[in-house]
Length: 313
Image (cartoon, rainbow, N blue to C red; front, top):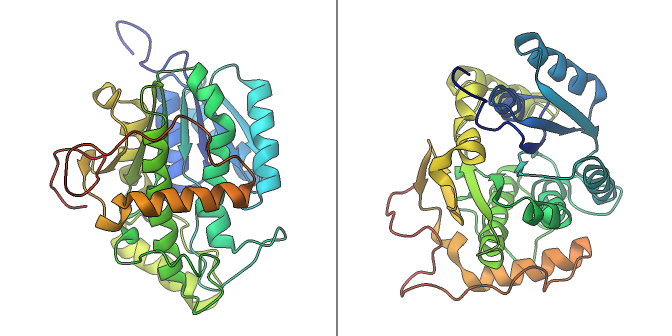
């Protein structure tokens, strides 16, 4: 960058699911902006290919990677220990890893896989790294959500999807849960210098959905190829939330196309977010009273951390 250092020089950014799609594009762009980018990925081969690809464009890029299957909470805990041991600062955590599963699967730890990967994993990783984030403040948490959260309210009596499993509904519910606990975390961290926001990247032509067998995987892949955004376009809002000075201090919001929008009415249910927080805390084994006490709802009407925006997203 002419006239000075890139804007993220000296910052450490952790990106989960960074070896493909939106995660890889996020890692690439943040490296170009000067950050030390830490890739949290499952495959060593894909991690090394991603690092080599970025360094072919930017030889001086500061990159490292750590391996973990983020659907397994034991590996999330190990990853957090490794990150704390290796990096004195974590300035940004991008919870990008996630997937859609057309059929119900259960991990070896006994959790339904969509719930484990899309909800429990980022909740636990954020909890384990929040001390490092607070010590690095101002710091940011960016959760990659989806417009798919609309129309799929949580069924608290069936959070593990044991009855009437449907992949799309399950995926949408997981993204609603991500918003609910993210807004709750934003309230609990209010005033600490750590912000928590969510990004909707749009329908992206990446490897999303291709983990599913047979027709489902081919169908989703075909739709994405025909109608999806390129991963670089899909990553723009994530990159914006991770790096832009325009959102310094902004917290508890949902963004699409780099604009703050309103998420679904269900995502602003304070009672549901408190109830979910308690359940998630019990499932991952962390104290539910963690972090600061929630701030009271501001103003009247619908309890919303988004503020004055009335746009829909």
